[in-house]
Amino acid sequence: MKRVLFVCTGNICRSPTAEGVFRKLVADAGLADRIAADSAGTHGYHVGLPPDARTVAAARRRGYDLSGLRARKVGTEDFLRFDLLLAMDREHREILAHLAPPAAGHKVKLMMGFARAAAHEEVPDPYYGGPEGFELVLDLLEDAAAGLLEALRLEADAG
Image (cartoon, rainbow, N blue to C red; front, side, top):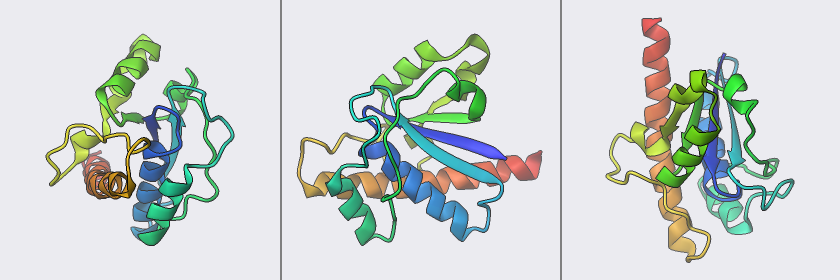
C-alpha cells in the first residue's frame, strides 16, 4: 500500500482538494486497495473543520466530494505513516523538511513536481481571492494528481 499525504497551510483549500482529486483518480483506476491518500496542514488554524465552502463548491462542480474531510495538522508520525508528503508550495516544503526525521526527508516533495502540462511550480493559495483562484487550483491539481498516479504506477511496475 502506497500512502500519500497532501499538505498546505490550514488544510481547508489546497490540500483537501488534492486529496479529493487524487482519491477519485485512484478509485476510477481501480487502485483504491493499493493507494491511500490523506491531507493535513502545516498550521492548526482550522483543526476539525471541513474544507472552505468555496473549495467544496468548486470541487463539487467537477465531481469531487470533499464533504467528509476535516482539517488536521501534520505531525511527526506522518513521516512514518506516509510514503510521500506533497507540499503545495515551497514554504510548506521547507516546514515539512524541518519537521522530517533525518531518514524521512526524501519523502517531502512539491506537488507540482508531478505536473504534466502546467508550468506552475507551486499551487497558489486561493483563500483571499475570488472564484477563479479555486478553479485554477483544481486545474493545477488535476494535472499534478494525474502525473502522480502515473509516477506511482511506473514505480510499482518497476518494483
